[in-house]
Image (cartoon, rainbow, N blue to C red):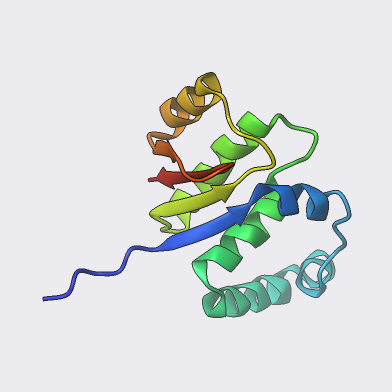
Amino acid sequence: MDKPQRICAVFDYTSFLGTSSSKKWTFSEALKSFAPVFGTVWNESVKERMSPEDRLWEIALKRLSSNHSDESNLIELVKLAKREGIEEIKLVMPYALDEQQIESIQSHCEAHIKAGKQDEFIITL
């Protein structure tokens, strides 16, 4: 009998930082601000067709901030991933996390982080 497939996502934090600083409104965000009920229905129908990885990216663009520390952003990212049902994140960073950052993220999120190759980390939720 086959095991159910784990829901995994790749999150490139370097790309996120570049994208978040130049973020523009999407059609659904504009729609939601002018016609909240229709915007919510629109968002839900679009969300159903998105992969968990794409949903995580979209939510991260709304909830994380380049004005916050990387550590607090990563804690929030892991919490968002849990809410989306993601069980594992391959996190690509512009630099390596130090041991104190890893321990802090793990304790705040009840997750396990192991270093991958170069500046990649596997976060198991």
